Length: 366
Length: 227
Image (cartoon, rainbow over the protein chains, first blue to last red):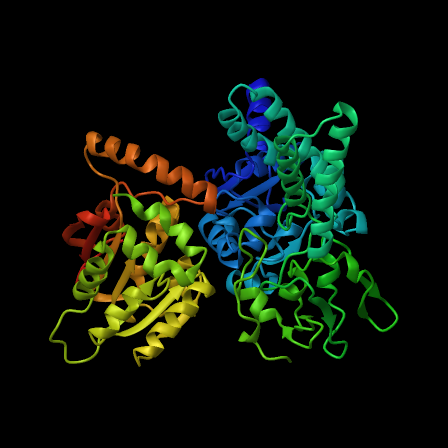
């Protein structure tokens, strides 16, 4: 059974771009009692496996909501795991008969889709956003549900990078293996090398149009020069091959990784130069933005009980802070003065390419 | 023709939903909207029928209901889809009450016996089994006695051969859809049975063969105990 589980996890990791929905509903963890915590997650197979593993030894309930078989962060950003799916899961589960408290521990990364105060208004249940990573749930409970910055920030270490590389390389390997007749192994090795290089080295590179052209020309020329230096001759086919290779490399290096890397910012509509802005007069120090921001962009300012934007450069425009702010004190602003407010971000979700479908003029500046 | 796995592709871009779904159902979907609306709003009423629509999406059934003079309250959990529905019905000059909520909420958001009919198309197949049952019971609660329930959805063929043929035809479509949209729908095995279990009397079952859709027309009993 252990071996099968391990195998399933390897396969699910390799094919994680494909959704694997599992049964929704309430799952008992250990032997819960009436005070046991209730954790919420989406119905993506790999997610539920990992959450269960992270919760080993903890008595409680796991409420699996319908996220269309998609992981929590993608599903909540993309409109699959929203307030309504949590409301539905709560209503169907009959939790009120099982526990005396009324608190749901919802994944922090669901905060772009699940609006805490709406869930409360519709069900009476209080939403408390847990840690960014399921693995940190025991630490979160041990700290009495107080989240240190380490528990709030999404991780992007070697393991996470490898998993994303594998998620791209596995399906691409199948394609390469089918197409590259006679050179199957080389093609698959190239795919993996590229994927690993991209997610370990290049995911932070965001190049402009002119840099792209320069890189393309340099890559092609360098390749030709190397061939010329090593072999002494340079045929037209070799030059063509290096040009094509250079174009492919530039394409890969400058690909928009929004959605595949937690450091690549999402677009507001088609644009990426929006920044998050705070209306200090509206801010009442609820600090929900601090609790949900996966990149620790905000810091509490205890002196006047307001919040301060201390790391604007890390903001990936996921919108979680706008969605959760009870005072609607946050919004996105473009350099030319347009504004996108919380209601737009609540209504219009991100598509697969990390863009929102709304029109910028849909909302007038506050 | 199980083209409804495409629904999710279409849903992810609400503006293209209508053209897409019409094409994929070979036009069958329009016949379905008309039949559902016709059954939900019988001609010859003295007062306009109060209709609750569950899962209005981009508002195609909503439009068909308005055309027959109904006063429609439409609920959906996607504000993006509802935005399209709102534009469409506004163009038609009708006023519809659009409410964003999960289908499971209708039982408590609306008063008991406050609607003459409840209608729904292509919404139940997106729900889990227990969600369908919960929603149908809630629909029963908000309907007046003698009121009509009309639901249309993707249904699973009864014979094993037909199911097999459907699965084979569906596989490539489902696989591509899965890759593109990360979602799928599940056909309902026994739609009429579900409706009966929620306390309704089934009056008629119909099929829009082209679109692979079944329509169940049922009534909340006039008198006597129900669920």
